[in-house]
Image (cartoon, rainbow, N blue to C red; front, side):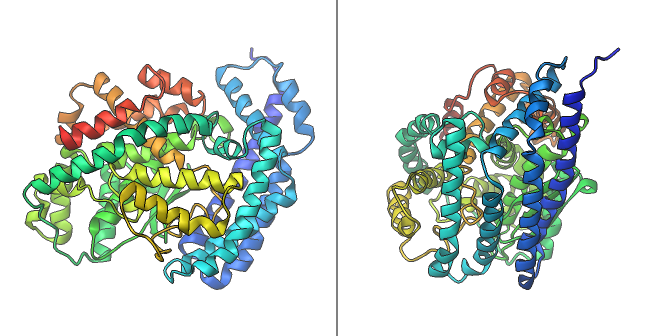
Length: 498
């Protein structure tokens, strides 16, 4: 007969209520980005601010302190014990911040994020700056309070929200390794590709409706469940919603079908992770994705490891011919070359996997300076221009739209998130190496269109584990060793120089 766990059960019910509120919050945010008319923003901001305050009061109820202490003494199984660990973590972070600051964050990020959607295409840095200053001030105050509670450095306290247990010193150690070999690799690959016969470019235009249908076809090929999610359009591609109702967005260009297609493949990786989290723990912290680096490892596994795999190009080729008409560019070998062209560019989400880390190094450097107080919002363009020149040899002066205004993360106050992208790329390479050890025929299987074994492996090893393990524990369990960036370097060298 199961032993009683009254305090744990009370906490679990509270988090189930929070999950239901987060469902509404997530869909309101998604609608704000995808469908809401501009005149609705003030009312939506007020509604989201009200909801953020309500959820904060639920998460910081003083009665929870005693419940957490009592639950720690109750007879819990391994999953319950992990769930309690995540509840305690949530409690520590929530109680570090006063409700007024939570409301302020919701208000200033909603206003800045919505204005950004029109200011970015207008290259309106001055207008953006007016809304962004309050966001930066709010995030700095959050960082200060979280640091006081946790004993971490302010930037580390922000990073910890997205990548639990990771510090900027650890990130710097890994990123500094990348800095030693990335510039040389970019030059070597670019020179090698320049010496090859010209790649056959695809001939457009590519009608948006045909691209939408193609994107949904590829999502189905990748196993996305349209009974539990959908695809829409936003200014910046993202995945939102909740595991029961996953909302993906992309953006289309009639000049280049690959932008939307590979962006959709990327978001499908996020979506499949969400749709396959352990349903027995739905609504509980342990049932959530472990961290944002692990989340990005899934999107980049789909986009880079699988989506740019030569075997997957064979699966895409007939779908492209069906969508846009047959042309030489869609021959599998040529398509693979299109998917793996390396060329430094201004836009992070449109960059190839070789130059992509440079974009993250730039943002990591600027974020730390902003949070530490070594730089102010007005300094961002100069820091950006210098970083893009040094890392990628590009001139970005005066181009705010394709420079520091290109991402939605800073307008929405998501400082500490950017390192997760390159950490995710490293995890993705490590996962694929482990997959190859477990399934030696996997590359040939992908070429035959046999993708189910790949998804089954991911589901068992990562998706179904939720937050049962810490990130280092999960990494060890999946791959047999801690995070090892050597796999990422080896993957790039094998694909682009092999």
